[in-house]
Image (cartoon, rainbow, N blue to C red):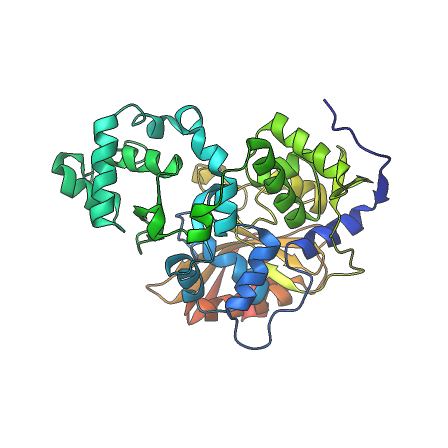
Length: 409
């Protein structure tokens, strides 16, 4: 079923890329001085969310988007924004686990209300265990902010995972905490250095005005989320707009139609997309975009892989869970953005013990300009400095590796 639209205007593929880059915060130069909370606020206004992931082979995923857009900064900035009152960012399920502004947390209450049927199986396992849920909730009230291990130890030592417990094989207390978190009865106050959630009561984390705000209808909430997504995309298809917050298909389609009717979304035709596309009414249309950035696999510019390929002609897959002998490009591969194109990819690891940034492999795209290796080397030097690493070592894998070794050398 197609979304009903007015007669679309035409946006070229080049214009679409520029619009998308600018919408994501790549349309202006990096700060010349210290990166401050104002820069973080500006980035969040562009992206709408920051995805979280536990992989720490280079840097935690939620730390990278601000670096990509603003350059080296104090990571404590995000810790303060998400861990101290008044909080500017709180955690919930948006595009996977994410940090979002508290006002957006309110827009996700419809997802909380659907926990019994839409949460993961390991989370739903606790849904009917009323006594356990009340015991865990009481303990959070007494102990929070606290981890699952700390809360489990207080309730029943048998619920605490040991070294044989891994993956999704959760003990009952962990499932109960995740169910309470998913259903919005508790939230996450922060994360530990081992990346464990520290659970707490909503009233001790969320701003009072967010707690007091009335519920929206599901339709109103999804429409607001689609507009945040559209603002972050600049231009995109219904599929793009849905994926940003992992929204239901039918409700997303209705939200897009409503936003088109209100003039917030403009139907467009672009050779960048096979399907009908939509331009946010406030999207900028720059004549060019300049700059460079290494992008985390979880950066919102590239985390929807089909969109990345449509806009940039860049086929990208994260290969962390691919057996080593089947990987094409490496374990933790970052796309390299140079001006308006993704021109290369590099497999990176922060070897903290040796104080070395290791580029295990580097590959150039067919359209990569001659200066790609030099520009990438400069960006690697900046990244190594930010991570506190003393040197860079480039491996021998990939067609760009020899030139990159010379440039780094």
